[in-house]
Image (cartoon, rainbow over all chains, first blue to last red; front, side, top):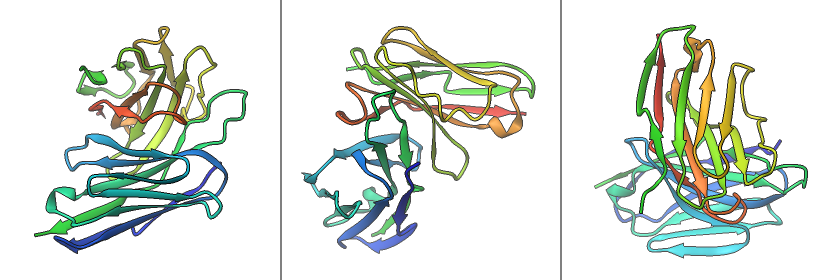
Length: 113
Length: 115
């Protein structure tokens, strides 16, 4: 079973700072998801990627398949970015059935004004 | 358009009772997932349906848990003889294709409290 480690577990930063959240996994994957869980509990998918880099607004996600590592960056952070950011990976498809996602424990981000 | 819909939004039940949770995925989404999130904990995978493939039930914690899906539409998660440790938010998500090809869309969850 894949092990997914996120760091840091908790991060408090000032508004405007550049934020980096890291995710490492132990075995080969076919896709990696970054999710955002708001304080009210709702979960939103930010990115799904299997190689390279994706950008959406102030958010950037990168993945290095060889190193089994992904990063989520937030530029010009804002208090509304305060949330839990979750990394999840799906195992390489085995052909006999679908594997569920394995989740990291999340990074609690607080952006102070 | 309509997102993933879950019902009920809250459920309080007595220990030992059976409960049924419902998920209506986004129309046309072939993949459907159930997760559990206990208070202060991370997401825990329960079961994954993908088209006509055999579902991945590897995350179901005990034989008291079961789930069904009708074609590519509604799914129900059933918990029999509920225990206090079953108290959690049960989240459903769907995606257009499999989890390797398309992003996940989450419902707002069902908060289950077992007294």
